[in-house]
Structure formats: C-alpha cells, structure tokens
Length: 398
Ligand code: CTP
Image 1 (cartoon, rainbow, N blue to C red):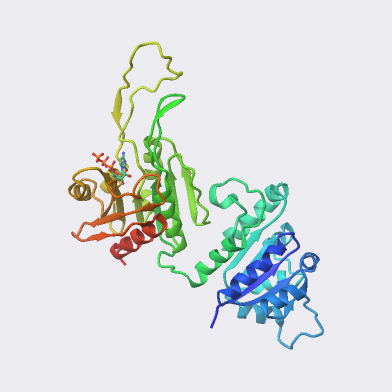
Image 2: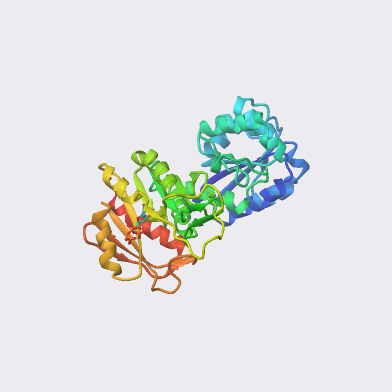
C-alpha cells in the first residue's frame, strides 16, 4: 500500500504548481487527499484537484455531503504526512497561534504526523518579523519548513519568498517517509572546499578545490536524517537541505576555530576540505606594490584540523580524513590513519581521469583502521558520497 499524504493548498499563485506536486505523489505510488482553503480555489479548481488526486476535495467543515465521520480527525488519522504548499502568511500565522477556523487549520491541530510547510509569498511579507517569528515557532515545534530558496533555515539569510519547486518538496517528503533514515538524529560535521590564506588584502594562496565532494557528503548525510554542519571555505556550492547548517570561513585558522568549537558534539566528522598547509607569516595590511624584481613570502604551518580532532576524539566518534596524493598513494594514505588518528582515510587519486578537483565524478579507495580497504568505481560525487557514508556507518558503534 502506498503512503498517505494530505496536501493543504492555500491562496497563493504558486497553487498552480501544487497540481504538479499532486501528480508527483500519485506517480510515485502515494495516496493523496487534498484540502484547499476558499482563497486557494481562486487559483485552482476543484475539478483539477479531484481529477489529479483521484479523491474528493475537502474544503468545507460543514459540507452537507460529508460522511458521518468527524472529517478533520479522520483525515488526520489517515495521513502519514501533511504537506502545506503553498503556505501563505495567513495560514502560517494561524498554525503558529492555534487558530482553527477552517478545514485546513483545524486539520493541522489534529495531525500528529510530520507536517511540511512550503511558504510562498512576496519577499517583503516573508521578511516581516511577524511571519519570521511564526515560522521560527513552527520550526521549533517540529514542523519541517521548506524554506523558499535560501530561506532562513539553511543559512540565516532571508529568501525571496518563492515556493520551492514541486520536485524538491516531493523529494523532501519522500525521503522522510520512505527513505533511508539510518543517521536520524546523528550529528555530522563536514569540512569542505579550499582555504584562502591572505598575502595582502587582494591576494591569497588557495587551491583548486570546489567543495563539491563535501557538499555532496552533507546532502547525503542530511537525507539520511543527520543534523549536519558544513564548515566550508570559499565555494560556489549550495546546501539545500534544511538539516544542513552552513558555516562559511576563509582561512585554515578560521576553519580550525569553527571545527574545534563543535567537534565534541559530533558522531561523525568528515574532513574533506583541502586545507592549506602553510599560510603567509605576515600578511601585508595594504596591497603590495611591484617595486622589486622579485619577492618572497614567508610561510608558516597552519594547524592540522584533522590531527587536532584526532587527538581529542572520544569513544563513539568516527573520524574520516581525505588524502590526495600524487605518489606512493596507498602508503601515504595508510600512514595518515595513524598520524592523524583517523578511523577511515578516503584516498582520491589524481591519476584517474575524472577524479579529484573540479570534476563531477570521483574515484576513491577507503582505508580503514582495521586494515580493510574499499575501492569504488569512477562515479558521480553524489554516489561516492553515499558510498563513503555507508562505509562510515559500518564503523559507527551502535
Ligand atoms: N587537513 C586538515 N588540516 C590541515 C591540513 C589537512 O584538517 N591543516 C586534513 C584534510 O582535510 C584531509 C587530510 O587532512 O582530510 C589530509 O590532508 P593532506 O593535505 O592530504 O595531507 P597532509 O596531512 O597535509 O600531509 P601532506 O601534505 O604531507 O601529504
């Protein structure tokens, strides 16, 4: 039997996209029932909703055609999840304050299953303190907020107010209802990207890392239910999943500080960042002028974050490091298991075409402390992320 989802539609133009969302659920074997507010039906028609959902539309609590069941209670019991898309400022306000004056707001109070809320409104309205406070309240009470664009959950910034795409909404609900939740509630810390070490205010020493491998790991862990913190050097990658908290840093020192503050609370720590091993000893306060024929920059060692976390690692924590080698790959990678007290080292080979920096694919060999080795094929970084997590999970103490 398919899972049961109740979709609540409120009065916003994005309601037309919800028709596609209904189709996505149906196509993937879900049973769908829909409740729509009176304003929602200014944008979409009952006939469209009923045809797509293949079920009767619930709008009126006092519908003369209703059955003898107390409808909102029966619907609440039937649902495996309630998905409100689009959610207007009005319905968000009602949900936050327990107002129940129509079918959807009444149903909300009766549902004990996961509730997903996809806000959609004008960006000024979305940024309004009252709306933000209401969203925060609902989030704190356990509602899953599918923040528009880069909304407030993902990174503390405000979004444009555009509803998430139906595909993204479907994926988020589906992963929670049907997906692999094997990291539910676990805390995962991931480092990603390069670091930029300043020479002067306009120049830096960096490297070619894009951060993609780390962001794929973050998304994969979040999909399995983990609460992920990604500490990232400068990267164009985005973290979409609401379970990912992103901390942006520039230098190795900043990455070190951020990681050490929270390392103790983590169950799994994966250090995929390409951290600079050296940083300019005396970054110039002003732009360096080209006066001499040549110049030398004095460099000093940065702190090794992986090794530092390895030193303070406690029982039950799993530490995963990366190694990027161009010679004596296996020997060097295995050495890092011990020198950095890691449980797993993921070796990226620069020799394989399509693996390493600035590629969409990767090929890795994972070395474990117990001597076992796991070699992957050349695959997308998303798939490699899954494999790394699966291997890590084999070594988590249950
Ligand atoms: N790493 C780190 N902090 C640093 C340098 C590296 O946390 N200051 C981590 C990387 O994120 C990676 C692992 O250490 O997980 C391996 O980094 P790599 O640069 O390959 O190895 P190093 O230990 O720096 O040794 P070498 O450069 O001599 O190979």
